[in-house]
Image 1 (cartoon, rainbow, N blue to C red):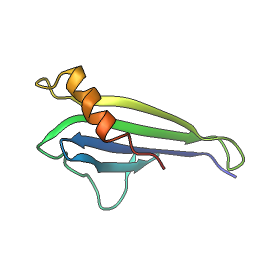
Image 2 (cartoon, rainbow, N blue to C red):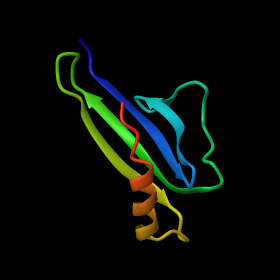
Image 3 (tube, rainbow, N blue to C red):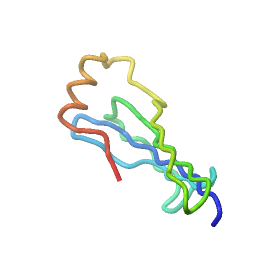
Image 4 (cartoon, rainbow, N blue to C red):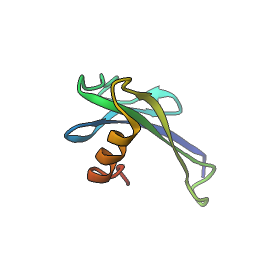
Length: 87
């Protein structure tokens, strides 16, 4: 089986997480580019790579953006209230 590579953006707001743009091998999938919510405080991307259908998925999370008005302490409080999305 062939390799698989995808990425999913996630935006943290004061109301929780919202899905952003989804890509497979860098190509934007439907519904297309998802604009970040105006009340976001952080944007993460979940990247997944699987070398074959029989191998384990390699998953990483990376910060793409953080509001300059948001402290790390406040982010920690939000992330405690709203844990990172899992699949």
